[in-house]
Amino acid sequence: MTCVVLYTLMELLIMFQSSHARQKEIEDCLACMLTFNTADFSTSENEKIQRLAPNSHKVENEQLSIMVRGIWYILVPEICQTGVFWYYRFPRHLGVSKMVGLIKAAGYWWFEMTDTLLDFL
Image (cartoon, rainbow, N blue to C red; front, top):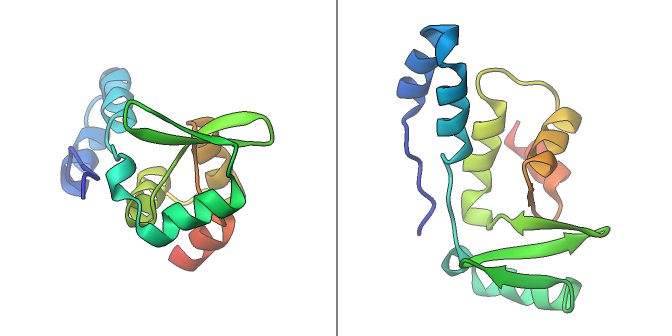
């Protein structure tokens, strides 16, 4: 598994409680907090991609991207979805619709994302 969390939740909490002057540094750390690649996708996920998006996916820098309604997103493997959930939920929950919007705005997507996020709650 190559899902990598660079900071523990406690380290992030300490960073958030510190000076607002460090906001850009905190945002930069959060932006690179999770990484994953094609090796993180299971056989069943690969079959699902081939079945549901046979002509609208590509691999760049070992990350799988998928086109959804004309926009390219980095596809998040199932094994990493919980980490992405917590990344966008921290430090507080904004609601599933806003969380989906934030995740998509950051360039990430996965099949049945809204249902998955509701299950995590």
